[in-house]
Length: 147
Image (tube, rainbow, N blue to C red; front, top):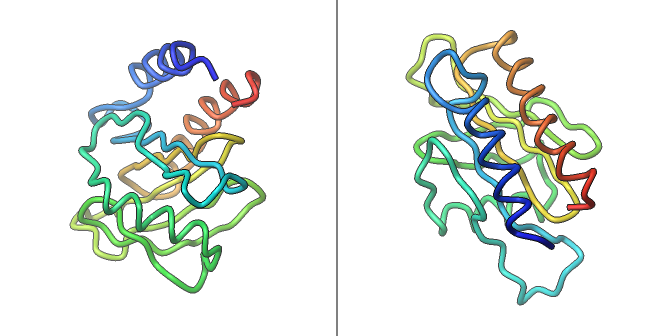
């Protein structure tokens, strides 16, 4: 895997999609993830923007994904606890259970062959649609390079 290529793709995508209210996402994480790899292979935060993720918290999130009981458990990212609301072949959506924002907060989690991409957004249905498009755009760029 060419990390320079991944980093360039991330930096360009993040600049266009992550940030204040006019952007589609408020934060995003790119996590190394290979579910078929040996158990000693530890998932790490490859990139992050708009959030300062806690590695222990991310380790617990990875455990949540590996257990694959998405509709039976919740997960935490930052101060928010999320409940999965929709599951698809390579991605799922979740809503925050404890959001302080009136319109709520959500997460889109998409898996590629080598990464988990987590996109966080503020808002409801329209914001979720825009967040999904942004996350899918980045995942598509990774998949074209078999990442």
